[in-house]
Length: 297
Image (tube, rainbow, N blue to C red):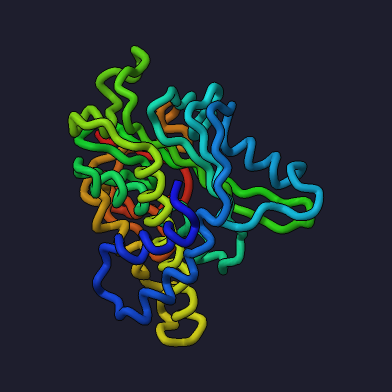
């Protein structure tokens, strides 16, 4: 695995965004630099997020792990996604959880899952297949899922709040359970190549550095008064998310747990300034949802 200094160098070299001056890009990357400052690698865990919770509460009697700490496992035996749905996590995939201190204003803190989704999409697309994001953060190639992201909040022992971001990417795993056949894919399936998992992990952490930094830069600009309307309109992070998403314009089913209980059908139109999904109902009225999930019709 790359050292943290080498990881920061990779983040500088791999940034796909040329809209920012070199000085601004360096400031963005300084904000995101804590990502990957500590990496704990395991051959097998039940869940990366559970182990990260353990480290926060009991793993270190002196202090909690630093923001940006990562737990990475070769395989998971009890992995799950939203609504406790099982996540198939055999050897060959990339499975990690990132710890991030909740230091942003609420309007910007809500965008952390979007930053993670963008980083995953950019990583996958840089390795061959053209990935797209479905609101909030399911990654698919064509009509098959290739990556999933789970974001949760937790309180530390000193009442400091953290975000836990769990990420799973199908990389070299090519065999899926019967219920996922035809619904899931992997980098190896899409490209015919076998990938070095450490290299994929390094690329992902580098992209996380940039996109987390971009979120903090947007908040900095808003607080400095450069653009006090930033919370009333989409900032650069969400504009990038829109560039990578195929959700706007799609007919969708919406629900809190949409697989079990869809609530209504609508046309996805846009996202608002903090990531809420704007949808048009059959009667022409609009509704904006900030939680729950969608299925494409």
